[in-house]
Length: 434
Ligand SMILES: NC(=O)C1=CN([C@@H]2O[C@H](COP(=O)(O)OP(=O)(O)OC[C@H]3O[C@@H](n4cnc5c(N)ncnc54)[C@H](OP(=O)(O)O)[C@@H]3O)[C@@H](O)[C@H]2O)C=CC1
Ligand SMILES: CC(C)CCC[C@@H](C)[C@H]1CC[C@H]2C3=CC=C4C[C@@H](O)CC[C@]4(C)[C@H]3CC[C@]12C
Image 1 (cartoon, protein in one colour):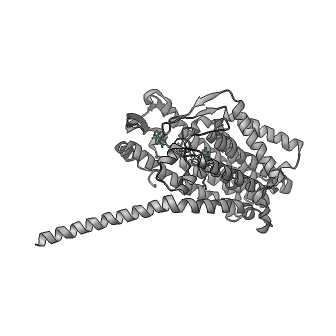
Image 2: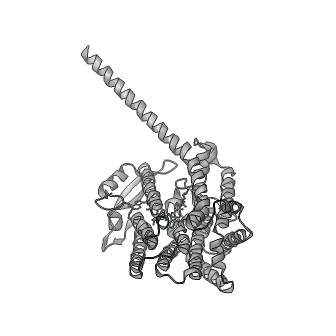
């Protein structure tokens, strides 16, 4: 009798634990798919509109209301940038395919990013030369520019959301999550690849042009300031590196996993131009006060971090593009795990996970150097309050979230092979720490 009693207690406990697990899972899914997306959309959109208020003294909240619909200048400015970016892609003859995504689709990309990068900067400098004061107008028009960008970005998100799609029809996710995350991994838009146009050619170029404009505007206000220059220089080297490596970018999570929705479209059209540029925006009205010597050190460490980040990404690209992983890393043949996985049709495939070189030091060392780079371009704003440093917690949270997102993807894809890789390379960002 005692035995039956203890067995039923055990059964009862296990049922309770199953129920608890189910409840926990339901809550987690509710949070992830139903609660977080609308909260993020409202919070980040509102925050983007308030950025000029946090970054510049003397701006009244009410004065931001008319900016919600932009101004003639802001519409012309973003119109020219969008048209310029699109024209470069449409006229480009050089074409190449990207990798296969989780949906087993691929996209056709165009052009040479590095040429576009330098051509755009040159064109901007010429505009500033023939129309002196343009940069100060851009700086003063930031509330209107953010207003216009929000209208364009939201219109595009709604447009992409209503495009007919198989994925939507078969999806069990709530509508608000689909709006946030997007439906398609690849889409053609105005005759070009939507992600290439929106992320690479508009979002990141706006980042470069705006920090350049802010720097020129600061020259009119307080003259040349070396720490401010250092911050803009690190960001420019970072963006120059991005365009130099543009082909490699089409192998990253944004392209192979993420979809065309609010996160990427609004993120690149509004969040990147408003928040990613915020340190430089802030420094126009608040001249940096750190010494030139310290700024030089930050500049040096910033550029070294960019090179290290590039090295990590390049090592993987080099390894993955060598036939059967046959290449030399740090003087020795590359070591790797041959990981089997099933593609979307259930067909067995294999892929190689590098375990030597930088990918043997930590599983996401590129993120570590990404964070370091951001810290170094924010530090010239030291002792001026928390505003110029705000990008640091943001990028840390974004990349930590990305580490877990990526590992969830890899675990689902490679199963025990991924566990084997994690045993071989146990740390994610910093060896012996995390
Ligand atoms: N400033 C910003 O806002 C951000 C910048 N970045 C930067 O963008 C760049 C790309 O980042 P991201 O796409 O996120 O990530 P990664 O370039 O690190 O790519 C992750 C993928 O690489 C493959 N992989 C993982 N481990 C190995 C290994 N050992 N050997 C070979 N392949 C491996 C897996 O894909 P597979 O399925 O092919 O096996 C995995 O999903 C980085 O430089 C990062 O710093 C990223 C996010 C935000
Ligand atoms: C909803 C928003 C608050 C979040 C928006 C996030 C996006 C703007 C960013 C998410 C991932 C970011 C990027 C990934 C990888 C990159 C490679 C690097 O070399 C340059 C920057 C970037 C393209 C970067 C740009 C912003 C994101 C798309």
